[in-house]
Length: 41
Image 1 (cartoon, rainbow, N blue to C red):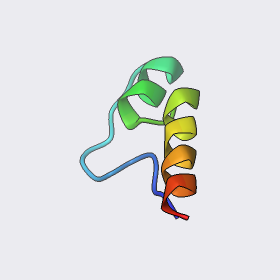
Image 2 (image 1 turned 45 degrees about the vertical axis):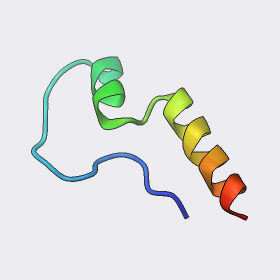
Image 3 (image 1 turned 180 degrees about the horizontal axis):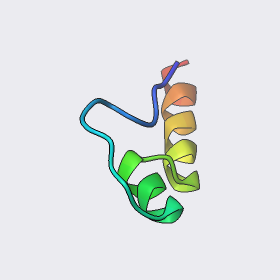
Image 4 (image 1 turned 90 degrees about the vertical axis):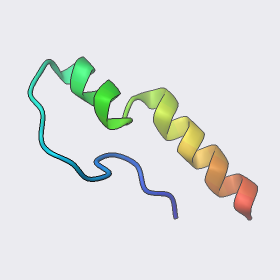
């Protein structure tokens, strides 16, 4: 299991793309999280 997304802190406001980047939930972030999970197996 790999956690992505909000890691604590306060909420922010902004455009959807900006918030996805800030929260680490863009496609590239999800791909990297999946790679870390596969590497641990």
